[in-house]
Image 1 (cartoon, rainbow, N blue to C red):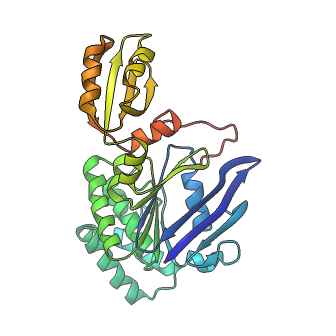
Image 2: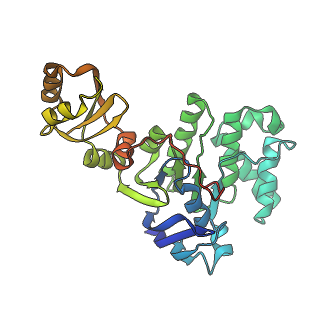
Length: 316
């Protein structure tokens, strides 16, 4: 069942196309990942999905409802986890959930029951009566996710959910999100963390400058665009074209960054390595498995840590 569908979706800021006519579908029960660097338009897309920003053109439906015509009805069925923790620091962990439940008209006894269940699920039961200001950053993030679930939404939107967290806290949140997905909850995830997209995403779109560059399942995207292996080669200045001519029939593509060439090996990396060793051009090299960053590098010529400052001044 399709729960979100965009057709020629657009968002403009003073003539600047933050989202430039994109199409996608999200199915119930999947984790749909929106991958791209800062400024790609990821946050703008999800803000239109949860009806925070009006669309500028095209059509967007959520749970069968048009975002332009029925925004209030849509909002009641969505949980939103923003980039920044906006918890009330002076309230306790439990009180943050109970107050938020009140916004949805949930009675006190039911709110207390749901809060208890969510605190247990996210490993926060022992912190329930502590003020939020006293708990760790990872715990605050888990509490923010729990708050987004207090009204049992049909879709949970997570905008850069693990930015700024240490690796252990990040992996703990991933584990909780996997459990939610197994329960049938639809997740919409924006991220610029490659491992996060690979770990959680069932379907991905890769965005840059408001457009979708590619879409599909993570492993399928890697296989289609790059292949199984990447050879990173440090080469003497001025010798890149000679080396690439030698390897032409063994690679599916390449990118050059300074004196490093990223060779996307089509099938047989051993044959490529043999030619590299005998070329006389190469200083050092290493062979590694390909990943989503290689896909983005091939599509755009730059990595996911790139962020472009727009003259509009908008943060997208």
